[in-house]
Image (cartoon, rainbow over all chains, first blue to last red; front, side):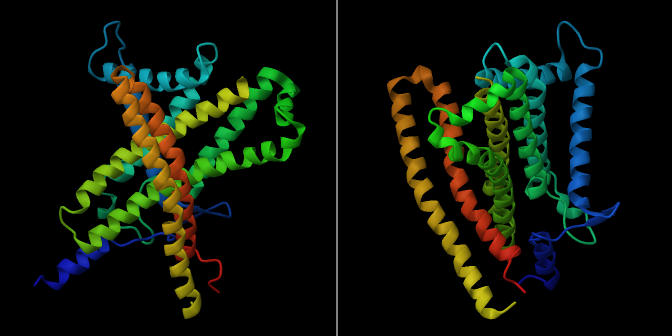
Length: 241
Length: 82
């Protein structure tokens, strides 16, 4: 029915390559090169956007500045909703960076056809489909809320471990481990699940059918970025209160 | 890979997602239903309800995702694959 090359082409496009990486050996450490390259791409993109947005900034914003101001307003609202009027200002950079970076990563993976670029091993995809990226972000969040709590209350911060009852100490300690665990697994699982569903559907029916799932992936990518930053802000607010 | 191990891994992967989807499915249905009810009662609160709903849906979704992560570990990074 179809020529042989049709099948081989669509199957290489739909090939699932979980657990295969494009390794770089840097100072004795094996790093996943394909993740780093896409991360740098996202960073450049974000830098470019912010450069365009702040170049000849004006009192009455136009085009790029308008867009960037809307984006900054959005992340400011995330921080203000969770942290409250009195603390949110100093946490906008952290929360906003988390949101924009994860959003950029998810969309870079979902929107750009990376598959067309061949790598010796592994594939380009959203950097957030590598568990190392998401764990790094989640651990940063952990450090951030410890820093927030300790800098506001000093050692009195640890009092919250025996509240409301000293009996709950083990559970309170466990919570510090489950927070980064659930943050990282949620993001990683969602992004990887989207990509897996798309590649499975593409290998079954290469045309049109995967499109709704791709749209769902784009939506889920933005929601996950929102969730990650909202939860990070909520954890910081919890440490501050 | 040993064929018994691969067969058991595939079955376990299927079960881990299927079972992990039951609870969150019920929970998300409940939450969405209540949210619709809330919006029907107070349409002006729609924005607030939508935000809270999405956030809590993501919390529930995380439980299924844990199952998914277990399934992915079994399929692509099986620790028993000697």
